[in-house]
Length: 334
Picture 1 (tube, rainbow, N blue to C red):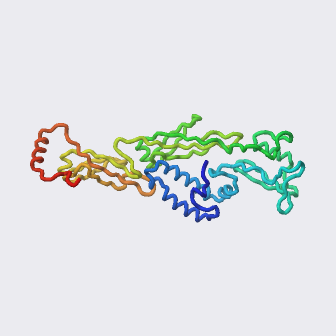
Picture 2 (spheres, rainbow, N blue to C red; picture 1 turned 90 degrees about the vertical axis):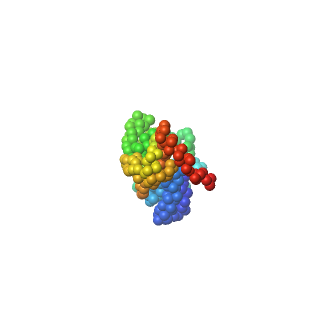
Picture 3 (tube, one colour; picture 1 turned 180 degrees about the vertical axis):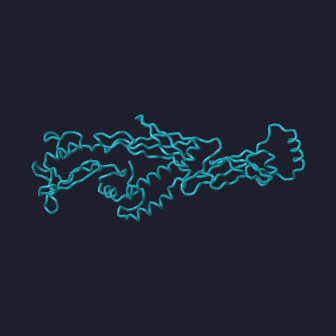
C-alpha cells in the first residue's frame, strides 16, 4: 500500500503549493539515484517521491485525496454512505445542522469518483427516490440490492477500485541502456508494447505503463504494468554511479617509451596519450564520457594495465640488467 503523499514529501496537510514544491525539490536532491548509487532501493524511493508530488501538485487530485475520495495512488476509494442513521425503521435520513435532510451518493464514472449532495425541495437538488438509491447501492456492491435481505445501509466490503498492477523485468544490453534505445515488452496478455529506455538507464530503473495491468471487474479500469530494467554486464565497462571505469591493456614498450593508444568509449574510440614511464594502475579521466544522465554526464576513468609478452629472451636479459642496477625498493614504505 502506498504511503501518505504528505509523509513521503515531508510536509503538513496545510502546506501551500509553493511549500510542497520546495520540499519536493529538496528531497529529490537527497533521494536522487545519482546521489545514492550504492543503495539498491534508491530508484524505488525516488519513484515514490515523484508519484506523491504528482498527486499533491494537482489541485483537483489533492482535494480529492484530502476528502478521502482517492487513495495515495490516485485510485478511487469507497468511503461508505454518510448522512444515514440506522435507527428505528422509518426514522429516515439523518438531519443536517440546520434541520434539513442531506443525502450523499457516490458513483464511479468516466471522470472517476464523484460525490453528490441532495437537499429537500425537489428538482436536481433533492434526494433521489428510494428506488434510485437501491440502484446506486447495486452498482457499488456488484449485485441488485432489494428491500428484503441484508440491510441496504450496510453495503458490505468495498469492491476493488480497479485491476491489479503487474511487474515485468526485461534484460537490456549494456550499450542499449547506456545510449538509450527502444525495447519490446510482451505483456501477459500477449500484447507487445515498445518502451523507450532513456540514455543512462541503470540497473533497477522502473517504467510505468498505465492501464496495461490486469483488467478490472465491473467495468472498472485495469491496473498498471511496471517494467523493471535489468542491465546486462559489459565485458569492459563497469558502472560507478553515473561514471564508468575501464581497464586498458598496454604493451610494456608503450608504457616505458610513451605512446598514443586507442581507448573505447560509449561514443566510439578516442586517442589517449600515454606519457613515458607510465606505471600499471595509473588512471586517466575522460570528462563527459560516462553515462549520459540528465543534467551533466558522468566521466570515464581509464586505468592502465601493462601486459607482458608470454616469452621474450631479450626482455628477460634486459630485466636482469635492471635488477643488478636497481637501487630502490618499489615496496618501501608499505
